Length: 183
Image (cartoon, rainbow, N blue to C red):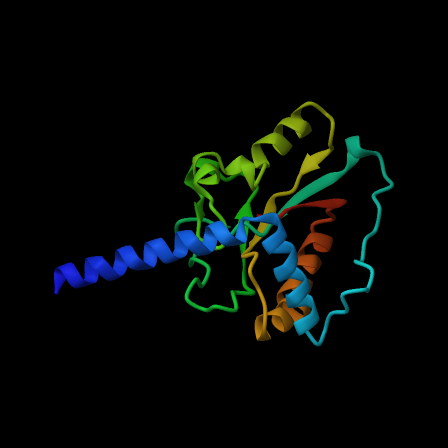
């Protein structure tokens, strides 16, 4: 029985590597994104993305990071990798976190390099340096992480619930701009 379970684990690992490799191809990602938008009843593929340009002095601005890299702290629950339609929840990441302690739970991209240096997908150390140098005014005391694979009913939850929750928290913190790092 032990050999059988090891064989299944190896088969699952190979399958996840194949899926990760496929989704890491830019043209596959573009096709998938178009398909996902068209499938959604809530989104219009031709609609403009809401965007407000930053107009204040950067040296006085408070910045926050928002990532879709699936990072979280070891004591936080991992993102749900068993649901093929993703996970619309988010994790709050403290601004003073030691990035060597974060965990990445995401099977839809190859995160081996990000595991070695989380700044690749969550450049918090770089933003801290920018604040120390006076390029930006401050780094917020908290940041947010999502899983970047959300579709089906979870997309509606992201749009109606978790996205607005994070936006409200950023407004409450008086964040001037959020820097999104997709993965």
